[in-house]
Image (tube, rainbow, N blue to C red; front, side):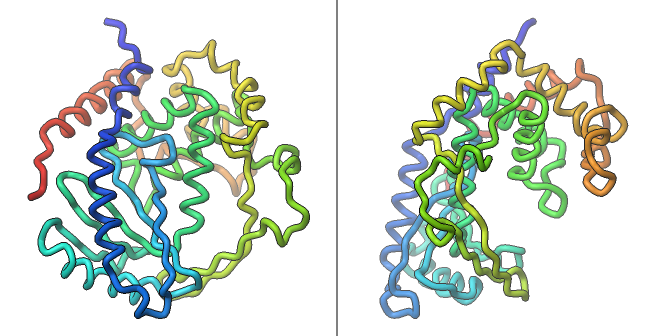
Amino acid sequence: MIIDLMEKVKEVSKIDEQKIKNALQFVIGSLKKIKFQDTEWPSVKFHSFGSQGNGFGTTSSDIDISLMTDHYTPEVPGLNFIFKNLREITENQCKIVFIRDARVPFITISYKGQDVDIIMNNLLGIINTKLLKSYSLLHEKVKAGGILLKLWGKKNKVIDKPLISSYALILMWLCFLQRKYDLPDLQDQKYISTLDYKSEDDYMLTVRRKVREDDECFKTDPRFIYYKEPLFQELQQKCQNLNNVRIEQLLQEFWQYYSFDVFTFRKISTPNNLISIKIWMKIISWQQLIPSIINIIQENNQKKMSRNNYL
């Protein structure tokens, strides 16, 4: 039986827009009831980020919201204030948990089968969401491969917070496509130099945050070619070589590329930059891998159908 992986990806990436809309309305509506005007950051804004907006989301992806203040504030005290207020405002309409000991503290809300995570001042997360969204729109196989790798990584426990995140796995996928198939680098200077900025002060971003007990402050260049930029359509044309390659072949080459003892990454990297995922997985044959991916997709759909709403 021939299975079309591209069609399977379309199935698993179908998002229940009404369910997401209802959850966002409930959570943001509850947040707006908090009296932020009585705090040291009276002006706050809410922005979504993460898998639901970066083009690599699936039916099981959470919703991520960043609460943005107009100046730096420690995350734990801020989230603790929000957590206490949300518990009173929502009156047991949802399940609320404050994970304060995580590397990046967050509040998670479960509302009618949809999980929503809230963190503070994750400006880079918002920017990276838009960056990945643009990559996902360069070519349908860029998006499809990223989604399949996420499903595979979670099922095989390759995606694990202490080891590697789904975001990191997507970056590995994009790196592979750039090295092997000339996928455009949306942050390449020759592209972003066409954007209208007069000086570094117009675009350089200063980020300050607390990571566990340490304050971190750095500057970064957040510029890239957004999918709404006129140049983006020209860059899409540079991806036409992916039309002639099946997604199965691309995934096979991805695993070969990052395998410890195969050609690829080791031969074109310095010893200090060697990347390998072999230590986290048992290498299996490609014939075993395709049925494995299909089973993961089917299991994901079954979980979606059988998930009970939280009342």
